[in-house]
Length: 184
Image (tube, rainbow, N blue to C red; front, top):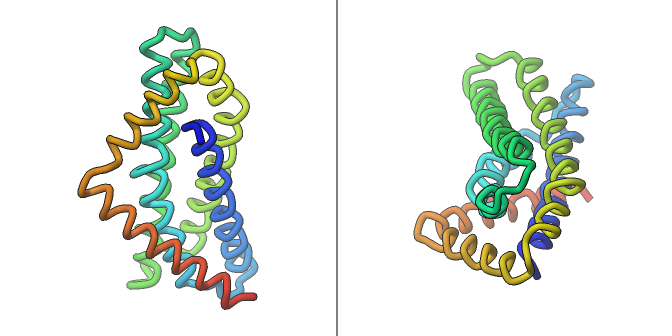
């Protein structure tokens, strides 16, 4: 599997988690009781996976395209900036959620607004990457170069901190799957 295929698979997984997040937020918007445990797990998932694993893989491709002098440098810089913005929105979502559960400090609607913005930005960003960025990478980078980038990305992710993140993510993902199984 190429790095680009892995990124597409990860986008599919992210989308499935966004669907769950939307469902819970929709329940909450209609003044129902969302599954707070699932919301907490989803907040943890989005706090960890995109920034600690997924975006790092994409960053390796960005860097290779920028090193090659691809004309769309402004586009690539915008994509990297969106990663940072999504990280900020995720942090805000997580902090508001923790405040809401622990102290009822953050208004529910503030959190719902942040989560909806996060969902829209994630969906648009992934669609943009799949329609422009990934085809650009396939066009501009040889299969050998993509394999080198994939190996470098894997090597960068294989360290003690990453192993811990992978273990924590596996626990989070398992918790999400358990919640889904209970709902069936």
